[in-house]
Image 1 (cartoon, rainbow, N blue to C red):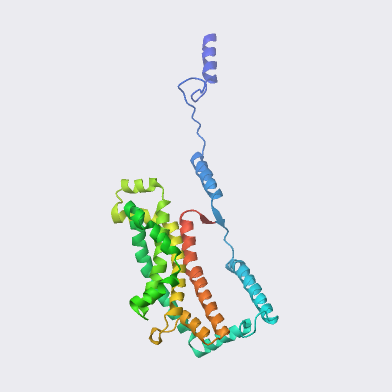
Image 2 (image 1 turned 90 degrees about the vertical axis):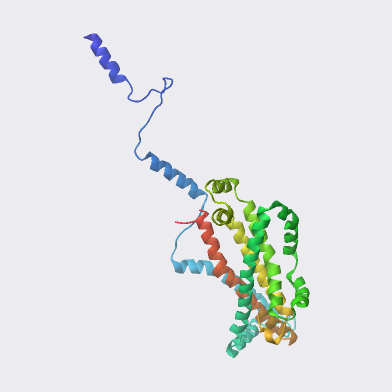
Length: 319
């Protein structure tokens, strides 16, 4: 009877799981929701490394984004007006903001303002698209072929630092006063930047991604499309933004010099006409339009693409 009670007590005191004190045994604890807790912990750690954008009413967001640049513009206009008021330069050399606004209004009422802008924007867009095609192919070749990189990699960097206006005399000799001259200057200014941006993006790809792509059979053009370009997208996008900036600057340099009646009048030609007439209101109006177009392209095209790329990589998260 005593032995029976002792055995029963020992059985009741025995642990239901494996005893960690006994070698070769493991302890298993069944906790409800354990997997979900681990997933939540990982998500929390990821969120700490991400920039979270809190969703706000669109009006408040618009005001918050517009307020700093509006204040900056007002400060510039106030300083400009003070310089005009105290005659830091003669008024015919430094017109007031009101006079520049009147010059813009006159061009608008004449119905020519949008034509000037469209001529330059269409040239810039066409030249940039051609530059993207050539720069992408060239960048992929330089990034993938070591002999080509060793041969022309330094040349690409040198071409990127070369002022675009330096190509204008040579392009005029090659193509004359024609649209081909303008597009040649745009290509020579933008292609090196796009190619170098893509090369930098490819260099930053983890070798693990490339090996994984080859493992699943993504080689050749399929590997470039599905592995290489998506992985190099941040650097490639930076090269595209810089390529647009170079193409726009190259276009203005070409339009300033290549001036012929049958070419049409872009913003660069408009700027040169103001210089020839010694009309500073005209000149500053053209400069202002060039600046507005450059900022508009950045805000309307490249900024949304950049935000989308960052969100796809978890670097910008909407809560």
